[in-house]
Length: 269
Image (cartoon, rainbow, N blue to C red):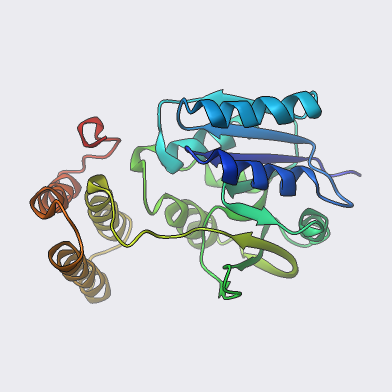
């Protein structure tokens, strides 16, 4: 029986990167995707032009929806929701800076007789292998999604992938992750030295929320959060511009985490 794959890509203001990603996803050899759904997180004209170009070249293969920046958390929430409304068997989840090798999907699908939660080998441009949990070409069965539920779109940015893929699927539902050595993707992600003002709010808020709302209070979590806070303060003082604004956002993130406030904070954008 043929296993039908519903690919999801979440993109935000990176038309040139998205184009390369679509080329590698649609151009798979052997096993092809059955549908590609793109969550567009902004009204960027160049991004929409890229999607239009590929939609005309591959009629019926691609669909998309436009959102007013719901973040990666919202993007993958709506992407997975669209998958659950379809009749496909597996969802293939990717950020827009993930470029699968030509045989990646074929190698992932070849493992589905024994596994339902499958990662490719994720490589940085340097050649370094990444073995964490992220939106990096992971293939998940419909049964796993039905069991785990949906990502927390209220997190907006940061740790939503860890919460869903590692905490919810792997730890809580005891579903083992299989990491394929044959299936490979390139992760092009580059972190800027200086971060936007809103970064410090979401990272601090979501990390605290994740550590203390999902797990019992323990020494390890306290050490991790203390280290994160000290490291972020150091970066603000030594590296960043707009130091006062970023420090205030850091403290606001702590306040909102302690009060259980989640969601996108519009005034930061």
